[in-house]
Length: 277
Image: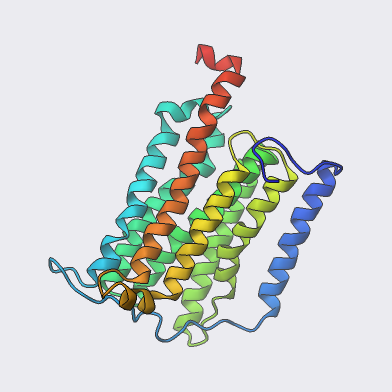
């Protein structure tokens, strides 16, 4: 069972790390082996195209504010206030800081994209998304596997991979041979690796239960994205599936903030050094 402090028994640390690396290598191999994934030419054609207050595609643009709110609240929590109790060293907060800051930027990038949906504007939506995915994966590695390695090596490496995947997609699209495979890997692999990390390694700030909620909310978001037009018609042309996707994805990010808030009282009771902080 996924848990906050328990991990899979009977395996040494080297074996656990080996399992994780093996899954990463396998996932990368699949991404390289499969044929290029072209972006749907109709991708930019969303169901709700109504304008309001002079803003095109208002529903999809306005619903992006959920990311901005959650990202701002999470960033403020990690930088100061109660969040200062959570981290043994200031550097350990960087993965979560990058995550919540990127979530806030997703709000801005998504609103910018939906105001004028093109491949060029989509770049600024996907860039912060990949930073958020990679930073979150780094946060769980930092908390559960190795703090210094997670911050000093894994975080910049994963961020470079995520940004590189989006840049690769953008230029391949511009060259007429668009390939979403690396971007899909960057988006899906953390959703596989983070639960696996929770199974293999104990954690202090992170909770496997919250990871389950995260995955469920994000799965619902992707389903709403897939059923954009169907949901829009079902709800009487009031709210589209893509707008709901934004809100549910923001809820998934909010689960991570709730996870950190939930860890706070446990750590304050557990660590005597907090009394003098």
